[in-house]
Amino acid sequence: MAARNHLSISATLSDNLRLDGALSANLSRRDDVICAAQRSLSNCLSETHLHQTVPGLRSIARGKVRDIYDWGDYLVLITTDRQSAFDRVLASIPFKGQVLNETSLWWFNKTEHITSNAVFSSPDKNVTIAKKCSVFPVEFVGRVDELYKLPQNQHRITPESLNDSPVS
Image 1 (cartoon, helix red, strand yellow):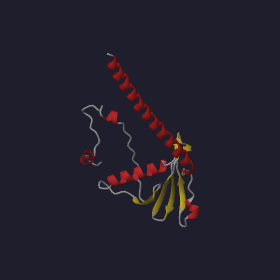
Image 2 (cartoon, rainbow, N blue to C red):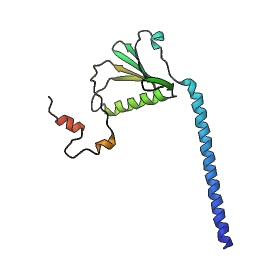
Image 3 (cartoon, rainbow, N blue to C red):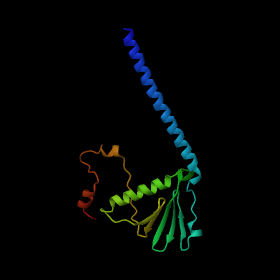
Image 4 (spheres, rainbow, N blue to C red):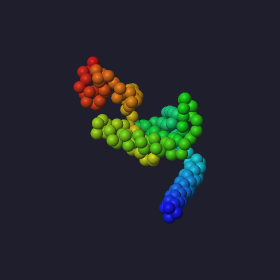
């Protein structure tokens, strides 16, 4: 009986030591992430003034997140790190603009076989150069949980159903 308790205590101690090691590693990783974030705060892209330094660019809009410049037949869209809510800029978050711009570019790339888009190039992780085009002002907002609750007599909108719909 004593040997069995000794094995049980030994196994428990071993498990606790592994858990302590994992917690220490997680705390170390947490500290590394916090230090990296603090170093990055000074690198936030909150303001752009390209029209003051790049000949031929004209500032046409400063949005909550993007700054837009006219460049002849093209628009230069700079995605900043500004965070906004309720139509107010609240703060800047390091790399937010880069993540947003690269996510947009990923989706434009994934859907270009369906329809062409205005993206011409992306010379920087925060920058998209787009061809000027006419905007078709449509916005779709949907919640996945609501789509699954549709009654059977209602139809979901899919690319196939749009092609089959009569044009009025």
